[in-house]
Length: 580
Image 1 (cartoon, rainbow, N blue to C red):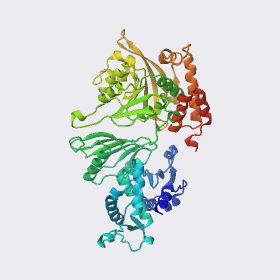
Image 2: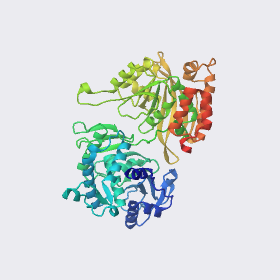
Image 3: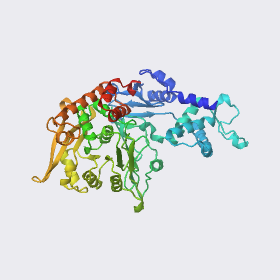
Image 4: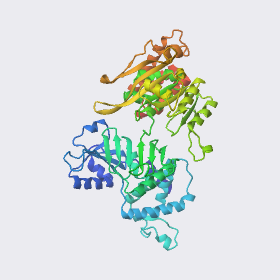
C-alpha cells in the first residue's frame, strides 16, 4: 500500500491555474492566499495572476502581478506608485513559498530528528533526485494524517515517553506538504534562497551582509527582493554550509571562493568581515537548467543562421576559437551551444576552475582544478592542460582563460590540438593586447595558431537587455613587416536593424585556405555554397521550432554518423521535444 501511495504522489503534477484566475490560485495554494490578503490589507491593492512570465509583462500597468516559477513557488512583482514613501522607485520582487507556523516548526525539528535516526537504514542513492524521492517517502512513513491515527501524539514524543515503536507524528494534509517542502528545501536544495534560484528570469543575484538582496531580472531589469538574512551569524552559517556542499569550503583564512551550485549557477562568496566591510556577501550568476541550443540562439537573434553555419564548418574541421566578451555577455552559453558542431566520434577534454562546460559527446574527459593548502595536493589549470596534451584529444575546451594558462593554451594549438575557450575582451585589438601583455605574455608570433574569435556583448535594444554576437574575426597570421597580427572581419552586427551581415564572402582565409581542401572541394570557393546549404538547414530547424538542445545534438549525431542526406531528411521529419 505504501508503494502505491508513493507512486500516486510521484505521478501528481502541480495544479495548472489559468492566467487571470487569482481566486483559483489562492484556493489551490494557501500560502499565496495568505500573502495576497496580507498584501491587500497593507498596500490597498490586489495583484493579478499572470501565469508563466513572458516579455510582455513589462507593459502591465500598474505593475502588480504574480507569476509562476516552480509551484508551490510563485513570484509577486510590484512597483509602488512614485509618490509612495520609501519606495525609492524600486521594483519589488516577493518570493512566495509555503510558510511554517510555530507548531510546524516544532514538528519539523522532531521529524528531522527521526529522519536522522532512521537514515542509516534508508536506501542508498547516487543523485539528488533519488535522495529527494527517498526523503519524501520517509516523511510519509513517519507522519500520519489526523483521521488515520487519533492516538498518536502531535508532538511525536508519545512513542518515546511510552517506549513504543510508533514514531509517527500526526499532521493534517496541508501541514505534511508544508513540512515536505521545507525539509527537502533545506536538506537537498538551496535553503532560504530557493525561491530566488527557482526563478529562471533572474540572472544576477547580489547579497551584501544583511541588506536587501538585489537582482537583475530579464524582464523587469533591477529588482529588490523581500528575502534577507536577519543577522550576520545566520548568513555566515549558511554561506559556510553552502560552500562545503559545493566542495569549496570558505573560511577566514580563505575568504573568497568561486563555485557552482547544484543547478549550474555560478556563485562567488566573500566571507570575512575585514574583506567585505558590510558583512559576508555572495553573488550568484544564474544559468538556464537546460543547455541552450544553437538554434535557440538563432531564434533569439543572438547570432544568425549564417554565423552558426560558419562556426559549424570551422569546428568540424578543427579550427581553434576564442569566445570573447565582457562579463555577463553570454560567453559560456554560446560556448556550450556550439559544442555539438564538433565531430561526435572524437575525444574531447575540458579543463575548468568551476565546471560549467557541458559536453554530450561519448568520449569526454572533464577536468577541474583542485584547491588545497598543501601545495603538492593542489591541481591548477596549467596541470590540467599538460594532462590533456598527453591524451591527444581532438579538442581541448577551457572554460575561461584568466592568466598564465593562456600561454599553455597557445602551446597546445602549436602542437596541433585545437582549443576552444572563453576570454574577457570586447574586440580583437583588446584581445590581442591582453594575451600579449602581463600576466599571460603570449608571444605575438604565436597568434598564427588561433584561427578565429567571436565577440559578444549584452546591450539594450528597444528598451530590453539582449545578448548579441557583435562580430567574428579571422586571425590570418603574424606579420613581420608590421610586427603585428593580421585579422579580417567576417561578420558584423548592425544594431539599428538588429541584423548580422556576412562580410567575408569570397574573402575568408579559413574557409578557402584551410577548410575547403579538407572538405574535398577542388574549387575552394565552393565552400561558400556548402556554408549557405548548412545555413539554410539550420534556419529550417529554427522555423520548425527544433530548439531543444537534445534535438539539435541528436540531429547532428545523424549527420556525423549517417551523412548529410540522412540528416537533411531527419530535419524535415523530426518530432522535437517542443512538439511532444
